[in-house]
Amino acid sequence: MQRSTLWLMLVVLLLGILFVREPRLEQSEEFFLHWLLTNSDPHGASAPLTVVDIGHDTLMEQDPVKANTKTSPHAGGSVVSPLEFALFLQSVLNFQPTVVAFENILKWRERDKDQEQVLMDQAMRMPRLLLAAELTATPDPDAPGPEIPGFTQVTGKRGELVEFSGIDRQPSEEMRLIATAGFTNLPDEISDGIHVPLLFRYRGEVIPSFALEAILLWLRVTPAEVTIDLGSYITLPQGRRIPIRSDGTLLISPNAGKKARHMTLNELLLAAQQRDAGKKMNPEFDSMRDEIVLARTPANPLSPPDVFAATIATIQSSAYVHRISPIFDCVLLVIAAAAVGWLRNISRVDLVLGAIAFTAAYCLIALAVVSRWLIWLPGCLPLGALWLLVVISVATHRYRARRLKATTIPRPIA
Image 1 (tube, rainbow, N blue to C red):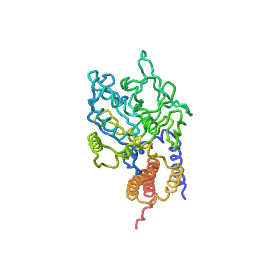
Image 2 (image 1 turned 30 degrees about the vertical axis):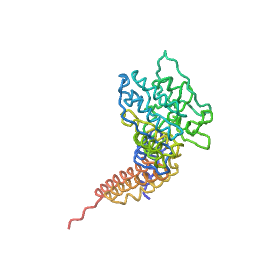
Image 3 (image 1 turned 180 degrees about the vertical axis):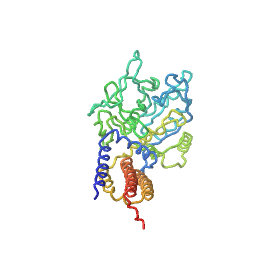
Image 4 (image 1 turned 120 degrees about the vertical axis):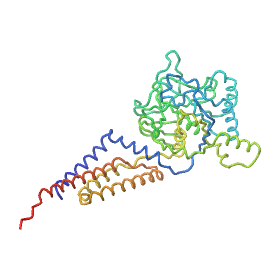
């Protein structure tokens, strides 16, 4: 084996080890992971979750200071009247779901107070009602900070959890007295569509987010029964474990919300009318008794695209995406280093075409694996190593061609 080949093998190995050990370089895998989860369709059983799309939601009485910010995805009033939400509650009560959750903040103008009372009358009949609210890190200094019950069994460093010190937006006091608050904040520093926060830090205490609070209500679990190891797992009764990162986020597939049953308000009203009339209806509605019903207004441009539905469905079905073992990376590095000498004997055109074909095949295999087994394969490391070998081989071909041309002995003159 030539000495130059040994040096090239050593370079490939060292670059691969640097990529694996350097956190800033390893974070580049997040781009491939985001593409992978966005384009995959996870298999598995359906989740006990029903998502009801209600009306059209636009901004009213928008705060001009927060108009161009992304920290308040549910800010603003709703043109969906309280009567429509009351009609939704009246219809869903026929199926007696375990939890009814509102993804948008139920807050209206003063002139809608009479209609809000109608909604209150229906909401008081719900055994477990979850209403959205928002935390803030800059509360009004004159406003008293409400107490929020937190988890008592928490281990690990809390420094990476996003901290808040007050409540920014929330429903009226009458609605808060008959419901549980769920905080829908999606801080830009930790959430990106595939990482959704389950935990926040509120005045030193660890509290649940909207999605986790919905699960606790669904399982009838109190915060005192939950054990949290930051950077590892959230352990719930009945042997349930939720993997979390040190910043309190859960890795989800954006398409996990497809495991839930989706319907419009009109479809729910029709099913409720058929039930009242004693007509035969879809048997799937009978299972709603053991489900979470999530009400949302998808037409609102500030509403998140099914991020909470996907998170709740992921936890309910325990369909957690996890990375393949690091041994896979080590094997790839060894194969890439061993292929240095072999690739030098392949023509440049065949090498480039083969690399393109391998890249396409690897992406398709990675999509199939994460869809079938919820295991994500690294992308930047193997594909980066492949194209590094291509560049090295092409450069080596040119160097050898120049060297042969320079050392060619001219034919003697007859």
